[in-house]
Image (cartoon, rainbow, N blue to C red; front, side):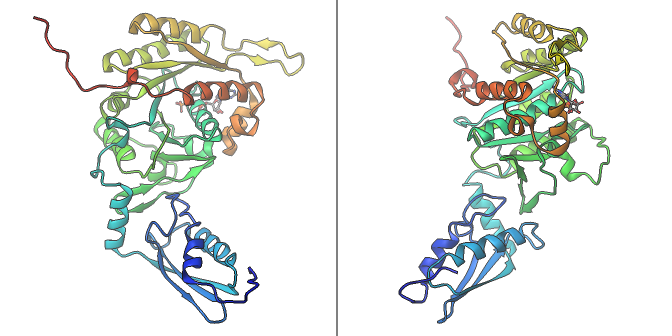
Length: 385
Ligand SMILES: Nc1ncnc2c1ncn2[C@@H]1O[C@H](COP(=O)(O)OP(=O)(O)OP(=O)(O)O)[C@@H](O)[C@H]1O
């Protein structure tokens, strides 16, 4: 308990100032700004009773909120004890909160697709499954967050939703009215179809349902201000790639391939869908590019060589714009282990060959300024006379 040399009772202003330092763990804003402080009562003996509104009953964050509120108020000089009681917001209060979080933006509007949005959106695509698309997405996201960027990931890989586990962000998102609060881990906010399906049930959704799910993830999830949003797409050239193009036309495509000839060919096909959707391809990542021999450090080209380069050249030819190889990531058992444990190798072993390669790619993508080059200006050229 903080001692007060003057021995005076703490003021309500001082207690509220302390409460303003406590962020809601899901919304990441001060509980005082969110209308979550119901009452503050201060006894003559310096005891403080605080009642906090939870957004929903049974909120999974109730213990965290109680601990953080207690710790903040205890630090106020003159406070002798802190008791925290919890209440639940009424429907009306929840509606007000949801509308203030939306900041006046209309319901169902996708903030990233608005003109002037400063969030860079990357849709991570691959031709074949299992080439490491989700691993690359998660590691790039965690590395960018470690560099201080505000990052979100949408796991749109309907059939193999592995992003929450790879990031260590399992658990169900809470909902405030129509707004979904994304869990976060490793500094990254994440939402996944897997968070809404019972157990490990396979998802047998068709195109229109996938489109609606993606729209909901983009419009109804409270992302806050993001610097970068990564979308982990299912492998191949399915419906969801078209949905991304319709919902976030300014999303740029990042193609992941392995060095193998066959994988490179399908990756090129997946990438060339961007020509039809008029999206920009930001670059190619070659994953599983060789494995250092554990005995002599010689690089063993398990999956051959040159796939990334071939895809980049092919896409440059098809799109007419230069598509670079952004980096090559070697096979590394720590990358796989990190994926299984929710500790991305780019942050747990940043200097390992795979970690360093991923961080370098994250630096290139995270450091780019969103210029007008990637944006639709929404104007039509006038016909020539
Ligand atoms: N560079 C690497 N070194 C070692 N293991 C890797 C590497 N890249 C990926 N893996 C492992 O390969 C497996 C497949 O990776 P991942 O799930 O990221 O692929 P994916 O392309 O997203 O697959 P899908 O789209 O089919 O779900 C995972 O177990 C992952 O840990």
